[in-house]
Image (cartoon, rainbow, N blue to C red; front, top):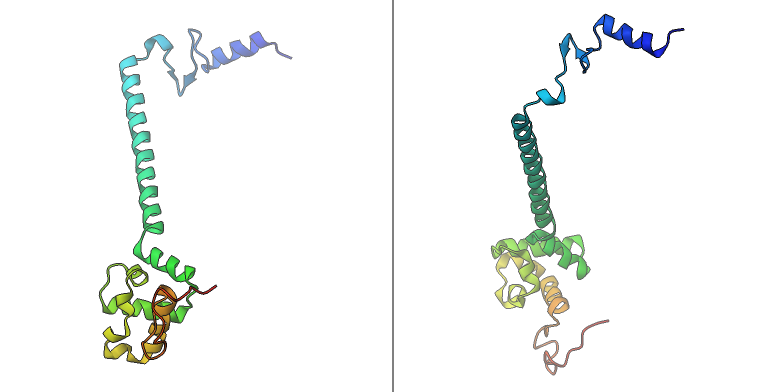
Length: 162
């Protein structure tokens, strides 16, 4: 059995350990701390830090943009309003068609401005869905349906549903 001293001298004899300090990698001695150019090391560390900072900043910006697109887009607002009012798929498609017909940039405007669902403004392509659009207008805005259906009621007299 060999002791630690024989083991260390074996490394020196085989050329794996430089007796002046430092490991030998492929017969090229690793420089000692005093031989390292500190200016180049600082420049390398600064460059590495800038690259890491740039990547982190880019990822943060991309995450923010994706979040805004996901939660603040007109389509997301429209979908949320439809869900809030409990509208089914067929009604959502009808409202999207109405928004496309009037070229609304934000289909959520249908939930803010009752004029888009006004039965007197309907074009012939929506005449078949006039009853459905009038029902939607009443549910969303609690607007009086027609004068013939409820002549005594005014908008202030109507109470919202449960």
